[in-house]
Length: 176
Ligand SMILES: [Mg+2]
Image 1 (cartoon, rainbow, N blue to C red):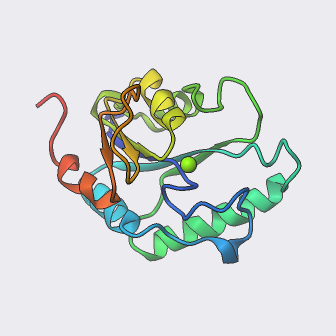
Image 2: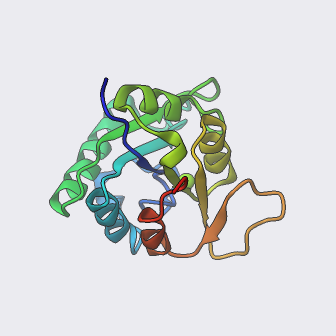
């Protein structure tokens, strides 16, 4: 039996890269400050690095699956060049269904395919639907990336204004 590993699950738009509506052009991809430091720390701490991203722009016809894959390769190359190779990138091209956040399908698929211990994993996303999807899958600690205070109805563990705030939490095991 393969050993289970924890993961850091990241949303893409507005979490890894600066939000651009229906981004698909590599030249418009710009990292959010601190995300690469967090990614490197996660890899060093033994976490899988997994991206789960809704990409309804494909279903809406704003860009193609091929456009999406081109941008994904660009992003993967940038992460690898910074010493934090992504273990997997999942996307949902549809407008609805079990893979589209806030549904947990992408997280569950990742857990199965990469042998992820969800109870020891963390997630970071800039929308409540990111939090709800991760939580529904069983991810234990889920952080909302926002400058604002955590909304009263949020399911998130806490709000973080900078991705680097998660670095000390990577070393603190949930069930220790
Ligand atoms: Mg987002």
